[in-house]
Length: 247
Image (tube, rainbow, N blue to C red; front, side):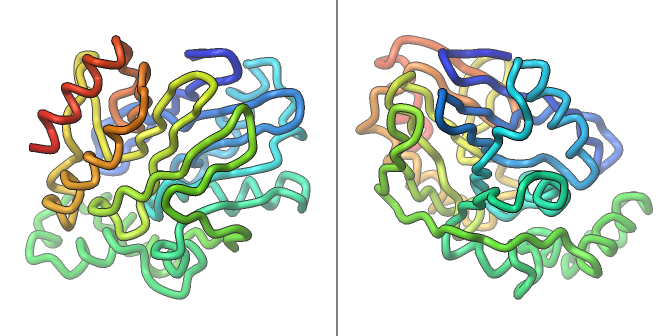
């Protein structure tokens, strides 16, 4: 769904725990660059390519993939995309999540879930997925590390905002030209309203909420939540909601 000039969300369906849900990677482009923010779950490279082509963009133009964080539903199809697309594809992430993305450490949430006392109570199909991901995780080389406050010179300027809590290296991104915030999992949306991060999937909830204060200086008119989709409204309304959520 196109939400601004050179900005669109891709709508992919995932069903890890048996209940289907829609996730929203974001595509950002201009005449020079095409950037994909997050890559869905393993096995979704084909629908990603189809969604990009549906927007009228040649998939061969995709030259950068930005991972907001290491979770399996964000990292999942990165290795396959890298295999299918030109070797010039550049992958960006934060240093704190790089070891899990590159396979030096296990994916944090999957490892925590496997060690949790409730693991044996989960549906067998879901337990099988967790075991498979830990045994054979999707691994991708990170080419470029991103730091808090870094401004990327693409598509009118994109500022990197380190928003840890959901994972240690979680990143959000502000698109200056369109006043769009790509929130990753720092925020969720329900019924068109911003809500906080998913508490059950956020190891450090106080830090995640504190991270929302880092978004307040930005003139945000649209928020893309990976889970929940697009939230629009006057910048003042979004700021007020962020202040409310951050506490």
